[in-house]
Image (cartoon, rainbow over all chains, first blue to last red; front, side, top):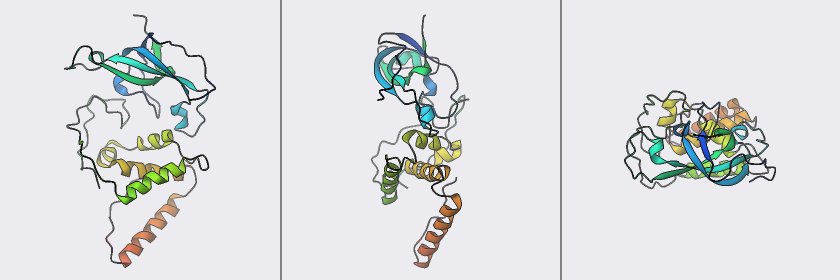
Length: 101
Length: 129
């Protein structure tokens, strides 16, 4: 966690969409979430950007990191589990967009 | 080697994914057996911890991950967890100009020769750069 935090763009309960773009170099947002819709469950705090740290750069300013909740049935085409099953994934702010739908 | 040899995963329809980013693709059953760590694997772990401490800062978890993800598909799928780790540690030591590739290869040849002289077997396999 880093003190040099920007104000976070999203709050718990906000509907968000994961950016649907390819990664340039190292990135912590898995492919299967790109373009998927979820809800912010919590804000973990602000952390140095791993995409910069991976190349020996300081990764500042620190980015807000969110716990985002997805419905499993929204992620997998043939999901066989219960309709209420959810998945929580930690995602950095620059990978999230507001979901106004 | 403590992990089973694997086939190369067919990343069909996976255009644009990084080599490690295979979540959701069909890859057969997961091996859930516990494996004992070999001495060299424990040493690899120790080396990583020392190289990223505040005194040295040669690498970070993120640069280590980035180097692991830089493998080609075939090499990624056919190497074990700690083989990926030791390759990444070695390559980061070269990238950060702590050691040169020449120095590492000369030392490896020296170690192989020493083992051969003592009648010990050495693996002919090399970890690709």
